[in-house]
Length: 470
Ligand code: SAH
Ligand code: SF4
Ligand code: F3S
Image (cartoon, rainbow, N blue to C red; front, side):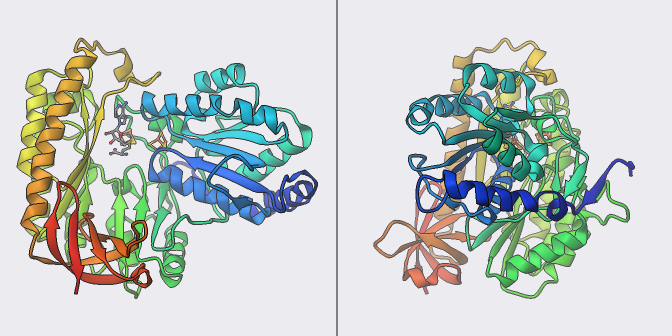
């Protein structure tokens, strides 16, 4: 345990007053009856969870939310830096706000999230988009009220990045997006430095939340009706390592699992290098943990895994998967995979395909390698052309589609317990999900949203099932 890590419950004393001040200032600034915010979040669930905290703070300052920017007094993009495509979208969307800002000069445009932690990006925004008034990075989230207040009242551009990344700040209000599925961050940051990945640079060092705080947030969510709770961290298996008297992740989920109620518990992401047999046993024995393991493998070639700095090889990955299959009947495995890492050959790529076939994943998040400024892989020789990588990528998608559709077809005629998550348009078609994370559509009354039901699977597509509630 390094001394510099710690938890501060300082939101109330340092920031809450600013929310009251913003409320007062907005009384005379708002365009409509109430101050309106338009918040758009990109990227992973960690960013979604941050976005829910930003909405929590804005709500307490009197804001309401709209899903179009036209009437907004405050526009915020919560950004993701994980691939170039994600960044390009942000630049495009910010560029598109120029006219809106010209029409409504008092609308404040802000950017936050992972992209803003990169110096070259913040500089580019500063130079190219003079109408962006507020920029802050992931480490400044808990100071948002103060930054927003400064920005509104001074009319000057406020840019803040690269703050202290070693502390966990508690007490920030939350306005969750859903009422059935919810996110619960258990840790922040990442210390793994996979050679392709920007996350450790933009999210800072790994730090865990205190167990009791997590347990009380979980209880609160269960009491208020959440039925599917996902614990979040970049590598949940190293939970607790920087805490004084910290417990292991397996122990943490056992304690959450003991909370009474009808709910499913999931977690992501589990790094294969730290995925222990104890964790698999815990899933197998638990009442609430869904029989689903998201275990990103990234590549099926041990040589590439080494170059990626993943700290496991193909054999170790398959070993843990086979253990999971032996202990958890019908376990549903999902994963992330990268095609075209620098130096990857077709031989390496074929090992990725054979691993996919051997494991039989329910679904995959598939990515073409995207170089990230400042990461080691960005300066590795990368001789394979974009066209060839795209061809490999398509080959991979075809293989996975075949596996997923076979799996779905094999479920026709079975009865599955599902959670009804919402309505699919009107027509009484409901969207539901199995414990193994497969989407099921079934006819039923909207009143069933938020309940568990048994569904007989009647039809299978490539990725989704159709069924009848029984
Ligand atoms: N912490 C998680 C994943 C975080 S990022 C883990 O270790 O699994 C989500 C996924 O994005 C990664 O699993 C990886 O597959 C992909 N990814 C990250 N950096 C990338 C890059 N530079 N190019 C392409 N895909 C990338
Ligand atoms: Fe990125 Fe690796 Fe950390 Fe995941 S574990 S966030 S891939 S550095
Ligand atoms: Fe993107 Fe940041 Fe998540 S870079 S994937 S939003 S941690």
